Image (cartoon, rainbow, N blue to C red; front, side):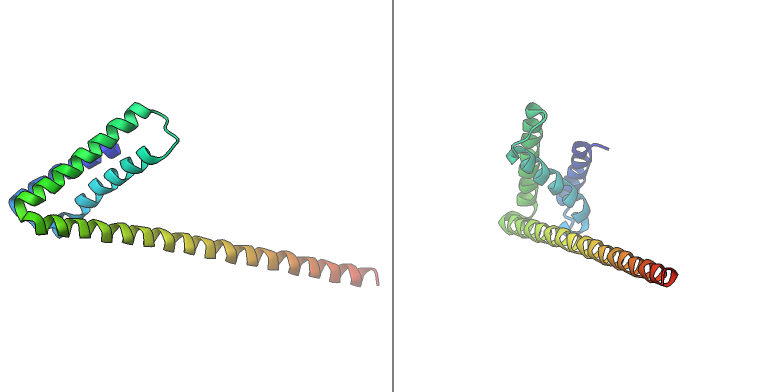
Length: 139
């Protein structure tokens, strides 16, 4: 499924849940999908390398419309405190995502380092063993 389709489906779910009066945490998965799309579209708009500028611009404005729709729905259901909580929720989610990416990169680097060390030890040990065999053979 395309990111825009996923985001639109999630937006519809979030809008219905907010109108019914559900807590934002109950639709956090769908909300995260929408905000991931919004953040991705904003980042794509800011980046310098664009394959299809018109498509990128269209997605950017669609993302802004989605963001505004969510804020309006929260405003109608919960007022300004709900919008403030939504923004806090978004900031926390962004920080968790950033920390998760950092931890994943850290784990990946640790694994690469460990494999490199083991490979180096194997080469060194193998070279030492071959030198020992050579020395014993040509004593």
